[in-house]
Length: 428
Figure 1 (cartoon, rainbow, N blue to C red):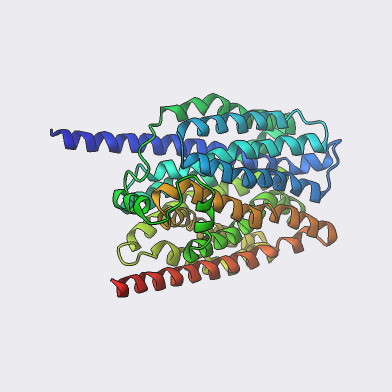
Figure 2 (tube, rainbow, N blue to C red; figure 1 turned 180 degrees about the vertical axis):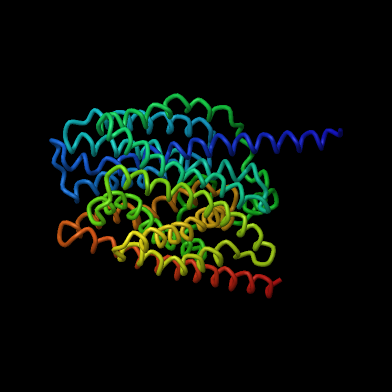
């Protein structure tokens, strides 16, 4: 076997190892993030006596810190070693999750959840940049689909583990159980090598580095340049509407099923968790595969596919939240979740493909800041506040509106990308 073949095989094995480790940590990321959703009813009835607005602010506080820390880690991810800050972030967020179980007041709990945001910012901004350098464009969509499958599975495990532990041992223990694995597994990140930025996009990386007036990688002017790229901005704004909808739905759905639909506490957490696992796994995989397939025919394939499946998700989301019969709202919820999760891999792939390889961590960081500032930093609190003013059943109906806005923005981004592509061809 030639040295080139051996090197290629070794590179594939290394890429798959990196994908497995990063996807596993991503699962823990979302388990830690959503375990709090499973214990909301206990927190409301506990001596803490939290209002719905305060319950919503636990996610909002985490998200605010997460999004504000993201640009700092984005700069770091484009300038220095990537595995080390990821490992530190995983350890920090897992430790903070465990500390959440020690809280004896609302402010203590809010502070612990906010600290989780710092750790997750290190991982969330840098991991996609690192992963992209292990896979070529023709397979990157599938790799990101596998990476992002961990989102629904981890979130569902947060609902299920949190719900089961809460029922048996109380809400404090749910945080302890969620936090321990990450502390132990942070060391795994250090096994991942750090390939050169743009290792699978050599020509694009060289062109970006040689471009006249190009901002140095990891510098603040990079963010200003990204804001001038219309397809990237529209994609991220659509992602913000998507995050608003999916974040609000994920945070409040177990409580909605229990309080509004009369489902038992155990079934509300575990049943919704099971739906998220199945629809997230299937939807994310199918979306990643379809995105890579249609990329053969259009460079905007990820955006076109995401936009149209999100259009289809709008009526399903409305029926899932408005219908009163389980025979209607459960099937509608499954369809809505399946369609929404189909966009997860393609949109994250579109974001890293729309920018230079030497700017990917910064692009992901700016995306994180935007999608959470306009998305799930608002939706859990907003739904809780609307619930306090009216009812939870009425408050959640803002979710289908956000889904419709998301679809419109992604389709507009696809048109903008096609327009720029056509102009570039006409110039050459």
